[in-house]
Length: 372
Image (cartoon, rainbow, N blue to C red; front, side, top):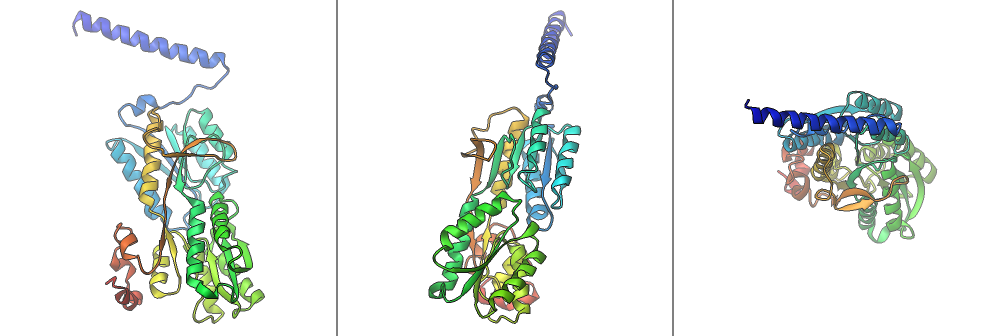
């Protein structure tokens, strides 16, 4: 190294040290903890993204969200970014502990799909105090989140409600419908319910309505059995189910009660079992939510935040949570999935192949729909 290069190196090193010491001094003077900004690691893409998903009852999280986010983070960081993953298995306390672990492990950014949007608020605050930005994924978490991506969840409920009215046609008031909403701990469930009610109220008779604990199919099954007992199977003309997992439990209860033909049942998530029930004529519809755009938006937000970059080129709107106003957001549109557009949605987008859907049990129905 020549003399001029040595002098330049000394000047750069001294300047960096001065900035570092000044930063430490100002933090101490303000009585704040030193913050983990992660910018040094992010400079060459070597970032750690903490990914916290809420449960594994719904097939989408392990099959779609996790691998899609991992793939996009790798793409955006030249393969240097690492995704550190944890699943809370529907336990809010576990998820809070997972956030603590992520903070201890000094991830550069967190993507959190909250089990309980209120219960996670304290953990979001802890992360922020540690200098770790938080992307709220799929469910709008409370606390000082930096960004949010999901689907237009009120529109999901409207799409479901409209589909149910379409299925009922001019018989919409010839009996009762049962509404099987999601878990009260999930803010999306309230939005699905709100959207559905905005379409259904006044146009159908709602005989029974339930908020289903933890979104579990077995709880939906129990609730549906109770509704059949209370209303009578001959009075039930349709069922609003907020997702496909619960639709499976509901349809099992309807069959056990001897209902034939089955009344139209809605769903959401385009799970494989749900799509197969649509093919078989047991479930009327599902809401297809293209997970790739949602997962990619989350990854883009996370990488940008880890690098200290603005989100102007990523986000398209803002939303307000109960605790934070004007959160930069990306909301992805949804599609009503029926037997008429399976080929043009989940098969075309590569979510499932025709062979995956059209197993031996569903082969004849698939042939009649032109899927085989």
